[in-house]
Image (cartoon, rainbow, N blue to C red; front, side, top):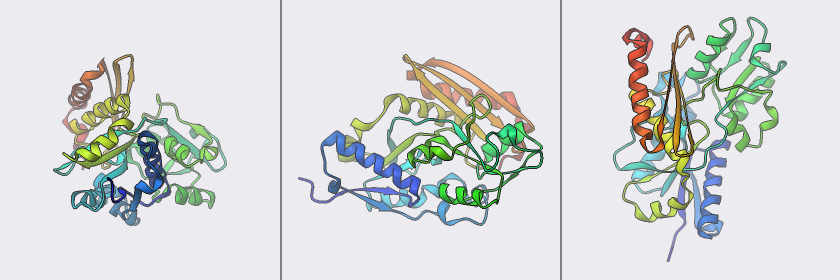
Length: 309
């Protein structure tokens, strides 16, 4: 008989809490458990505390997961809920991603203060983004626009936009939907122009390897097709040694037991891009992603990566 609540670790932002609450709700429904069977533990992470410089200069993706993973390893929490796009491709020994929830919309949303679309922005307008991928894709399409670093959680970025700090910003549509903020979106960016980040729109759940009780708890809420798509995207990212220091975009879609993959790498100034497409049996997701990463690396040539740190 369970004597203490199952402890769910999460960052403290509104979006992170919404994702933890969604995970709890799915577990409650899958196992007919009361809310009291779970405790949501908010853990302060370096990525949220560092606001004075780009995360690419401070250590990359692991800044959003390090302290939560430490809590997993020392037993303070039983499972951790993350945004998949924040997860490094190499996890600490003893931990693994056990579950992916069904993926939300993967696209990026444009939010303009006085205009509705990216193409409507006048020459010299300012657009804020903390993502090197989005910055590079904006510069690729609109080299006349001033792209500035723009840190903070969703609510902070929206407030700064309203106050006039920038003319527009981009955010993941999935996160806005989870927060009930779809109404702030002025347009959705088509994937042909703005391929999303690997993992965008997907919640993943990390736990200790060999923790059979937690893995059994999580199994019913795992979404197989999302898991296969993310395995492919993360294999592509790993083949490129990608982190939030590097502009990489990728998306995999599962249909009828087949996987369709598209990947892109960009120069940080948007001046050069390389794209790759692949498809195959969904069971070969990891190999397809890894091969696409190797092929695009060869296609771009070693000089392309000289400004990647």
